Image (cartoon, rainbow, N blue to C red):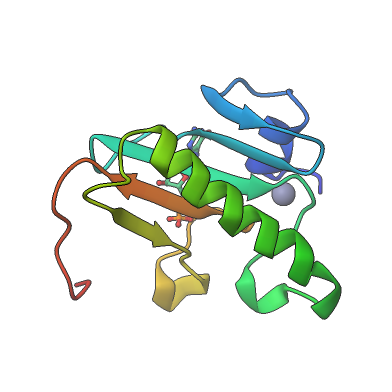
Length: 114
Ligand code: 5GP
Ligand code: ZN
């Protein structure tokens, strides 16, 4: 998708501090971290948000979550846990319109969201 910052990161047109990459998924450090660990994992395929997901994307998104928990474990979150967050559209506070899951950890995280 033209002009999508995460598509550009997925294609290597914009640099990112990557922690995992395969043919269909990419994980990298968030530019503006909100916790000691703050990563983003995206499908390389452009899906604007979770409400734009098709049934055909189910396996891909399942693999995204499986990889997200594996990465969280590899970054020291297995014992204390953390948070896996997908913001959606304006009420969800989504600012980048390419589906991404935040992986947050390394400190206690408050709930409920403000
Ligand atoms: P959202 O608010 O859409 O759920 O999250 C978007 C996230 O992307 C934010 O946490 C923001 O810091 C991060 N972000 C925005 N632009 C870039 C970028 O160019 N590179 C990286 N690594 N993160 C970005
Ligand atoms: Zn995109």
